Image 1 (cartoon, helix red, strand yellow):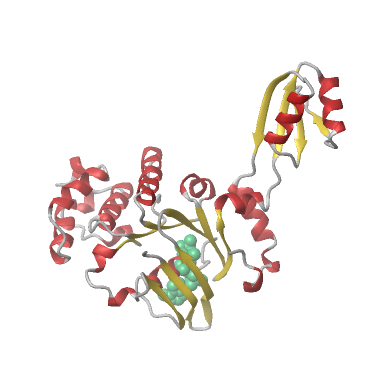
Image 2 (cartoon, protein in one colour; image 1 turned 30 degrees about the horizontal axis):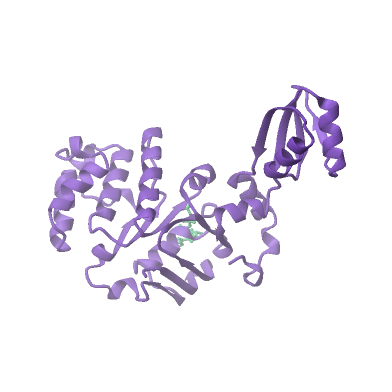
Length: 306
Ligand SMILES: Nc1ncnc2c1ncn2[C@@H]1O[C@H](COP(=O)(O)OP(=O)(O)OP(=O)(O)O)[C@@H](O)[C@H]1O
């Protein structure tokens, strides 16, 4: 099993503590979203995990070993940190061929990855002529070239157009379904909610949450049910009998706060209330995240969710 293990990790830049006694694990078979506002320490944590920077204290290991000690690291761990990393005067294809050659990766992977990332038609163009989105795709192709078990991507949706964003979502889901360990940083909530199963949330270098996305939302945002009926008296009576308050809106719909659609649907059905519309209004990751950061002061490492 190849997990990423971060243990009591701290990184200081002069007097500034960018990463503060961070402990979490990123497990295989799921996409873990790495969230936090600008400057929270996400990139620094990824750089430490990849051995690009030295921790002040603590450890970050991959499959139990520091990245620097891995043999054939590109075949174990694929990373996208900076899409500008490719040499501008090389073609995209040559960039990948050079990486394959220096990492003992079969050259057939180059064309496969160009295809996978939608770059086949521009593969013979120099990288300096690429758009930001194309560079991002090339960075992802490079990360996946060695067929790695562990994938770390820092803001992979950067510069991608809507079609690219849909593509990356599918790609991340596929990588996790293949059993890989997929760790993806972002500061875009809706985007992260669309691909992540699990979340690690940072605030000012500290761990604020390490929890499944679903639990993260449910713990912070109360669900609501919206109803439309042709018999409002029966609706109000049935809800009141079960201790629910219904609020009528100008458009004729009713809503019930703090309620699950399964419960409301069942009780209205049992009471014979005609239902024209029944909608679950689940909280969003954005609402949950804002709730968390608003109460950030209450969170310490002793109350973190694991
Ligand atoms: N090489 C460095 N020297 C000094 N300070 C640094 C260095 N790298 C990062 N920092 C500081 O560490 C903190 C964490 O930065 P980091 O880039 O890890 O955050 P981030 O969560 O990735 O943010 P963003 O979403 O903006 O990329 C910031 O205050 C940043 O200014």
